Length: 425
Image 1: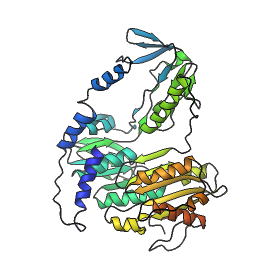
Image 2 (image 1 turned 135 degrees about the vertical axis):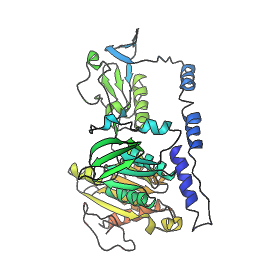
Image 3 (image 1 turned 120 degrees about the horizontal axis):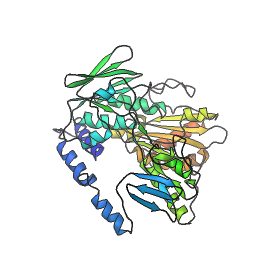
Image 4 (image 1 turned 45 degrees about the horizontal axis):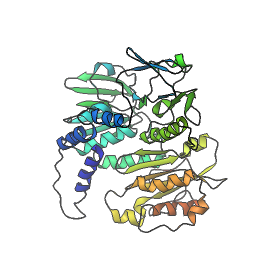
């Protein structure tokens, strides 16, 4: 809801130069009201509880602790599972150990979602998906935002093209980006919060948002009583079984902290408990999303992860502004398509789609990775024009010719994989 609201503001700002003039006046209050009323029910779960109970379930509020292979204690009550136990306790914000951080009133994602009023300025610690999403949202509502990322690139887990496009978009919107910036200290400075970076540079903001990922806490679940524990995550097999009569799903399995992964796993867990057939779990075509503008979607391997696995890959790149649809789109039409292809098998191992409707483009790429479709097969398709997904066809054609980057205007030569520049040169 927050991202959708912020994107409508930005689309209105793009009217100038394309369709006339628009007077844009951001107001956070209807966003906060909608989140409170429609998404969270006033931070009251009674509607969801009632729906669950109508299905025949029972909900007990409290901290559950395993006391044996099939028993769980919640307060003074104890429950024995006839069929099995499912552990799905999720994750929580990961707070880094930075001197002074525990002495200031910093925000986490929970605080942003609950915010009724926005600060004048915001420092975002972490340039991953959540930091980028929330930083852009608040910037579009008039907050002066600075994103601080310790790695050399924003979204460091994805292919570098995604980072280059996102950083350019952020800077065009007035979002300050500090990459390769390790935080040495945090302190209160009057009504503001000051951050000291390695090298001595200092930044200050009305609020500090800590968005440095999420962590799983298994320490208070009583796993040892059921023969589990000892690791950072709960180890599961291809049916999500952790032990006899115990299943685990979601963040606690350590596969990926995404809602869609938990939903996917829940289908396998449900089928296994009921004795129904379901294909075993697969993560080779895992989709990943960053809901910023332009959208960033990825699936499968990046060039870095494929190379780390010892695979010889070819990377094809197509810049959306050099496609007919990207040109038509005008403002907000930036983006890129990248394909990571196994040279030996001609199979697509991964892909990234950055740009408008990135998720819709990624759908066909995810299917190609999941179904192990060869590039020869993708090359034989007819791609509708003018479409953003047509850029996939151009990238596929380039990869088939052994090219690293599709010839775009301003392109100055081919670069080997792993040595690509932000402008594709």
